[in-house]
Image 1 (tube, helix red, strand yellow):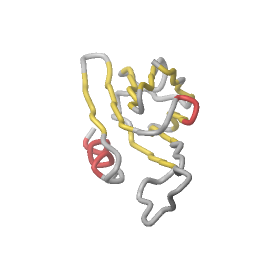
Image 2 (cartoon, rainbow, N blue to C red):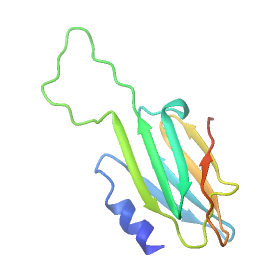
Image 3 (tube, rainbow, N blue to C red):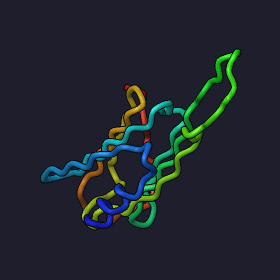
Image 4 (cartoon, helix red, strand yellow):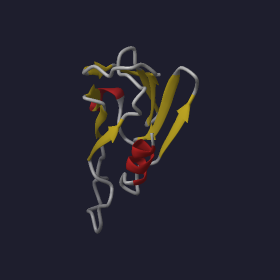
Length: 118
């Protein structure tokens, strides 16, 4: 699990994440401001969690960028703990916060993780 903790530390500074653990699952909470369930793709492949998010930004009519530090896209690839699986994973997105519950299990098959607006 230290690889996941290390990977979370390597996320861009604008991304904040918490990792919680219970006896039967992990809970990953990631702040993705501006992203929605429709602009988010979460997959588990070969023991890794792949997160692709797109945020929507609008430029007020009378303004133009002097500096733009909020990227439109976030792509993150995180190693799963060895006892976590994508099978039965559940996720929700509410107000730009992704909560992803990953059950503990021996194998991590490839599959998409459905994300719903809460």
